[in-house]
Length: 370
Picture (cartoon, rainbow, N blue to C red):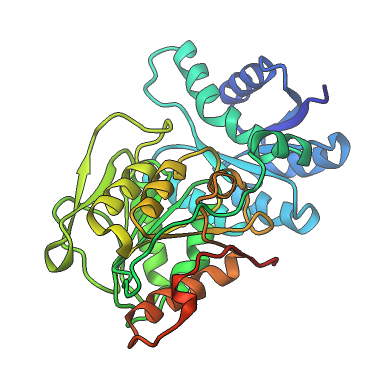
């Protein structure tokens, strides 16, 4: 078995040792070297040819953002996982890194109480991301079910989409930055989003998306009334649901157990959207690792709603959308640069004056290659 070769970059001797020992303890991984700053790391990449790099944000000589900018010029496809602190400054720098081309991020263990707890936290968060980002075509094919046509769904002839629910994870911040700015100011329905991220990160992400979007984008809060032409992102460590439909629809938050090892979870949001809006829901599943969203997508479609997904070519990891596709719960598949336009088209078309069309009663699968 060929192991995944990793270069660890961090200025802290303690963190480097902890990471190297933890990663080396997995039989699928091999730490081929370490570096205390970006300049040393760039030199070692050419010597060691790693499959993936873990990169600290704050380092002397050449910090993580400077390193990433140079690295992307030389190695545009090399997976990079940022390893940052769960602080306002760390979250902001991590989002900067994602916009510069980082593949994903993991947060450094804090207040774990013991080295064993820190190791367990790294194993739980970092190892699955490394394996997903470095999975070869054969591994991906084994992990995903074979594609199948969409399960037929009976939809009302004159349904109107009244809400858009989006679920995403790995690669999601950049995907949302591509989709939400394409939504027009006069968008006639609310948008609710689950992006797998911890607290602080989700608030900063919402603020950044709002700065580049025509519609307001906010972190969700309990009791907020849903309004047309606005988007809400579930806060880290809280499930977000919708309750009530129409003018009085509002958001609710809870601390129920994680689902699919996630809180917030896409399935939790999609389940509430299916229950409240039924056939009037449009679900969107984008890039992400794992299976979160598959059950929720099925529930939306069972109640007559639609689900569209991001295609494999444009996804950082095609786990979440790929599993929805393999389960036959995708009505259509689109590259990332078409998703915002397609969401808008479907919603606007559903609100336009009705004309007779045999196409309105058919269920088709559209796969458009990027």
